Length: 124
Image (cartoon, rainbow, N blue to C red):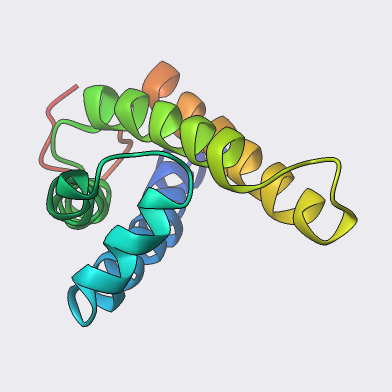
């Protein structure tokens, strides 16, 4: 088991990174629609492009294991903000999405605390 544990962060990075790459590429197809969705929570629409770019960079960073700790910390914050702004936990239909965002933030915090594992572009 001890020989496999260094690779668990790789699997976590791939799972989380794929989620953000797919989401980011999906938003590229309709940035204006995503901007409208952001506006529904009171955020300025000009943040749509930075959010899409961040999701793509976050996904790539996780998969490659590049700047894992800082990007994981930023990703945790991103998930928590998204949960609070877009998933009202008092609505039973949104409670699962609210909790999923916090679960993903938890995964990011584990990567922040323990690093990228092997293999990764990060050297520590």
